[in-house]
Image (tube, rainbow, N blue to C red; front, side, top):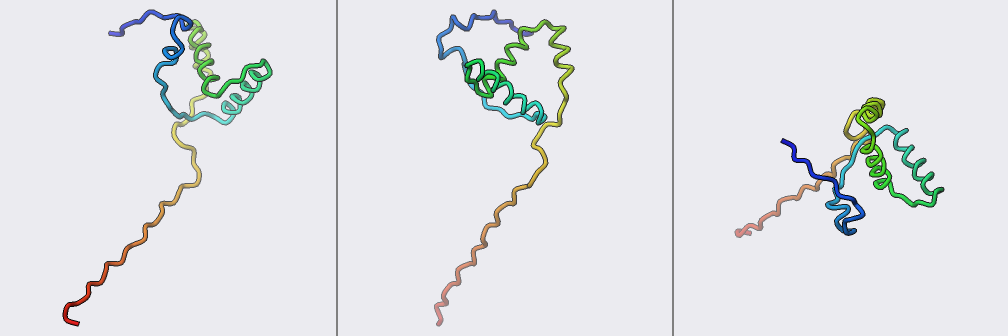
Length: 110
């Protein structure tokens, strides 16, 4: 059973409670979508808004959240599915550890 929590107006919360716990994550996207982030950041700058990538993505999430289910389904269906994970490229070589030579014990008899 899902417990629904009534929405709280963000402006009613103190600044420290608005963001809550911050989570670091990484994801994969096509190069064209990644380039679109730079285009949108530039548009925001021209509007006088300095915005970071994460803030821009969060703004997009806020816009998607406001869409009716029908429109959200259309937008989600239009997004190209990509293979997750790291893109192929140069593999880092593991550093070889130097082997230590065992110390020679001095003989008692010499």
